[in-house]
Length: 253
Image (cartoon, rainbow, N blue to C red; front, side, top):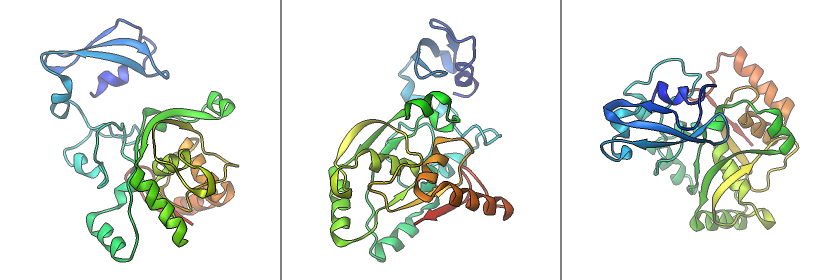
């Protein structure tokens, strides 16, 4: 909702504070949830969900220093999106188009869906508390039975499991069980993947170039090794690669 939501993260936020929104809607702060975020209640002339597309602004990441544009509703959305719930697009998925998926299928690549609703903690630098606890902000996920069966089939054929993005990798590793396989499941994961974590399910990873000190960069380092990742980032900087959500990607084998 533009500036109103950013205001909620200020030092003045406290339970009971009300924020005026467009068209007669009012948001009331209820309780802190995973500071600096808050649970809110919204009241107005009609259910807010029915008006979000008209009233709200697309939540571009904070490092994109411009207002959202109409084109972003298409650009900042992956071809895999099906259900609302994430606060940000899983950026590796932005590189895929319908034509590319057709070519992959024609080459014998099976494509199976997972869901992870990216939370606001994805943009925060990892703090000392997370490092000590070894756990991260929780995010909701779902790994359907058909996808679990597809992974089992890939194992039986000796095929590789390639995760499209850190969000996909987090789901698969959260659902890992014996023999490098997964179980179908849904819930919340606070799994913190960082060196010296050894991936149990994912054989290869497609991912963007990420922000320093974030959990996403630590996850990539767990898959490829810290020094190798830093070397790749040095090359990316030297060659003028674009980073972050509308940026370039790498394939880690």
